[in-house]
Amino acid sequence: MWLKELEIHQFRNYTDVKLQFTPGLTVFLGQNAQGKTNLLEAIYFLALTRSHRTRLDKELTQFDTDNFRLQGLLSKLTGTLPLEITWTSKGRMTKVNHLKQAKLSNYIGHMNVVLFAPEDLQLVKGSPSLRRKFIDMDLGQIKPTYLAELSQYQHILKQRNTYLKSGQSMDSNYLDVLDEQLAQYGARVIQHRLQFLSNLEAVARTQQEHLSHDREFLTIQYESSVDLQSDLQYLVKNLIDALQEKRQKDIKKRTTSVGPHRDDVRFFLNEMDAKFGSQGQQRSLILSLKLAEIQLIKDVTRESPILLLDDVMSELDNQRQTRLLEAISGDIQTFLTTTSLDHLQDLQIDLQIYNIHNGTIKPE
Ligand code: ATP
Ligand code: MG
Image (cartoon, rainbow, N blue to C red; front, side, top):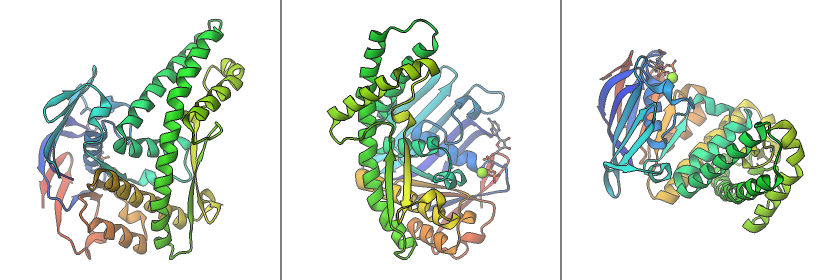
């Protein structure tokens, strides 16, 4: 799939812009703080209805305004698909093919993106929430039911935590009901994640072998506070048991301490925890994961996702740059931000260049 057209209204430092793209490589070239990442963020938001940089959508509306709108024209195997998101302080409104969508899970998935940004280099070493977000964003694009179940889970989790914080005396029957519901959705969330990670592992392993000249064997492990079981009913039961075991502690701490919202992922290279790997090893690993994401989306949707590369070329050495560029030169629309064209001089593919200056965009 590829994005043919993008219209932006009052998003970050863009007042009104309308851009046409080609299916190949588009470069957003400009000095620091001109709006390059803002553009990728707009494309990302159009696909996933959220930003990769902030949870507060209010930050995205142009200063002194209170709403923004993003519109895109997507070219897919099935035809041209218009997408639209309008944000106001009252909420988001999404449209697919000019029709309003009541549920987020009916919107997300039409447009697939894979983003590779400097923050991703923290994926191995950084906090568990980064790794959970990585799974949620990717899995959510290929499995809308996952998003629906995750949001149900989060809804009940919030209810349970609000109750724990309420300060009233705890009704154990009510907590039983919440635990049961939480376990039903939580177990499904865990099950989807396990399946996804096993697929991801298979594809990323091949990439990692390639990048390390067969020296590094990648394994990915899901770390849960719950005993993992492939059978859903057992998993539900284990989750309920774990919640009950921690109940007194949860009441005291006024928060829920077990469940998929606390789980984590660990990466191993030849059985060594990749956290202890060199910087180069970690970068290869992250690149392998990103390339694997592209592959998985392709396998499921039969179309290439759109690749967003935010200033990552300069972070990679020659070999890794080459590997990444090989991936780009296939049939994958790519948007790349950079402050200089140095890394792109030798590229054998057509590129469209836009100069970005203080919220204005001019084709070169
Ligand atoms: P770098 O090369 O440093 O990464 P960049 O071109 O990617 O820079 P962006 O992050 O895209 O920069 O844009 C940053 C600019 O956007 C800042 O100057 C900031 O003031 C402006 N900006 C951020 N949010 C808003 C907003 N809500 N309204 C208007 N301008 C904003
Ligand atoms: Mg930037």
